[in-house]
Image 1 (cartoon, rainbow, N blue to C red):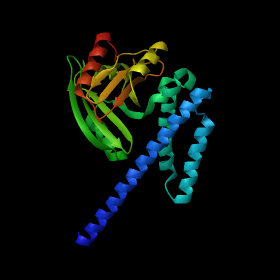
Image 2: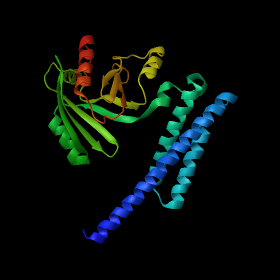
Image 3: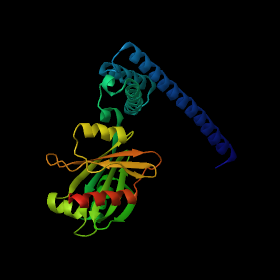
Image 4: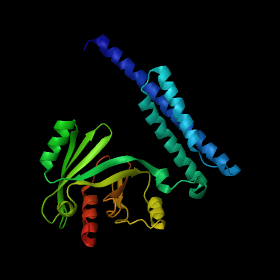
Length: 262
């Protein structure tokens, strides 16, 4: 790289940094305005943001995308994230009853990952990697007192699959496959917080397997497997941990072993 091209690159990066600062400041201003709107709504008894308003905001983003040549799907996702945060702020100020949305509807952010129980981990990795283009981002082996598993985290864009194979016939994963066959074992939903959410689940008589399982930067909780749908749900809150923690997995294994569930 010549000195001229290096200088040009540095200048472009400087301008990107300036633009990022402006963008972050604009987002902060918008969220502050949302807080002010919520305070006015609380004072006047005005209902929380409705679906028509959300649709109008998203439509404006789509129209801007068409005019500016920016990908409409990207801008739609961006505005969905901003309006989701706005709804969360409103409900925190208005309260759950006035907000009119469930605690989960207000705190769920995205599907964090899908855990898939497999018979042959190497073959499953090859299928997702070679046939579909997923990238292997982590391999992990975890052993508890009884259960253990080998796993691989695969990612494509914003989609994450965690493939799990039991390390012995006694493993929870192996027993899951023996009873139900291979396939989706649980779906993990990223949420903003755990305690209020679990209190709400308790009031709704949700079938919880665990309380909050804590690790640095990572909180998780799990339901039991629901017999009608065959799905177990996980709720995960991340601060500065984008991966997984062995101690949390062991605690989940222990909870499942205590109740003899898979």
